[in-house]
Length: 375
Image 1 (cartoon, helix red, strand yellow):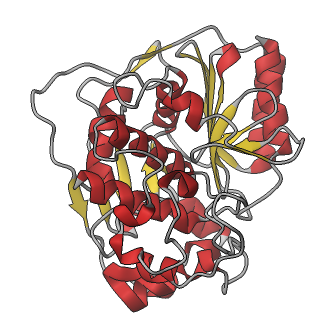
Image 2 (image 1 turned 120 degrees about the vertical axis):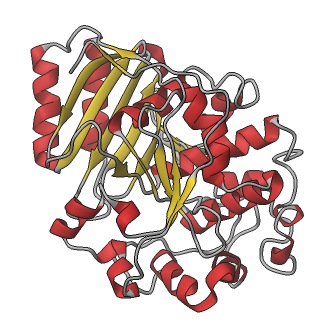
């Protein structure tokens, strides 16, 4: 780990993100949920060779990440043990914006990027906040159909933007990553069958299981809808808006790659790739409140428990998970996370190749607590 990460430079005009189009592949090869371990380990750092997407350049002025004091040996050893036990590719710990810990495994390197899966949901949520601040979206209480009129007459009649942001639309959805027939696994089939209309076609065919606002059900499909809401309101793909509202303000050192769907827009619910250090920079942007990017108090609401899961202390905000100790975070299948502990000014970023899509998170939260208690 060097004394500082990042550099300087202030070109006057933003470069236009490039649209990357890899060679055509058999659709069966693109079933990410069912890749084997070796395929995931090789491809998670090279998704731009497998899927089309926008290549967004690094920030004109990358944020310098100065080196802070090292973690105590016991805490550092606990992180290394966790990395070994969970097949993690990298962990970075920032405190007060300074690097306290940074290590890599699985042949992953600081200048490589790793795909995020549902960590992207928190990026999309941040762009939703930016669109509110910029006046493109009038209110989170606006109906979804005001921005996606194709959903009129479906179960999304009467559902608000806030309700899809909190996943409380009351619409039924199956997010079982191991079931090829689940709604989340069927997204690729809709892409093959309906092309540019895939997202809308899949979502408008769903059924209602509860009144809007009354039940939380985790739905990647609804974050895809948030992406469409933002893109329709702003008139730009998510990746290009992210360049202005996340990459530049956060000072990303390595840019990002965000997959596109057949509409030519970006996939709101997943599929952006970035360096481990830029996962951490995103967490730092959230920790510092996103001043100038989102409305004042946005992250307090977005990272607050808009939905509470009983008396567990866990909850859900606007595409951010909330945890019992006052921390919050973004998390994705196969082991990606950005966890923020405001009280200790900590940001902890993780990328991994778990052998299964989902596993209990208790050991990760225990590790975060151990790091936080040490300082």
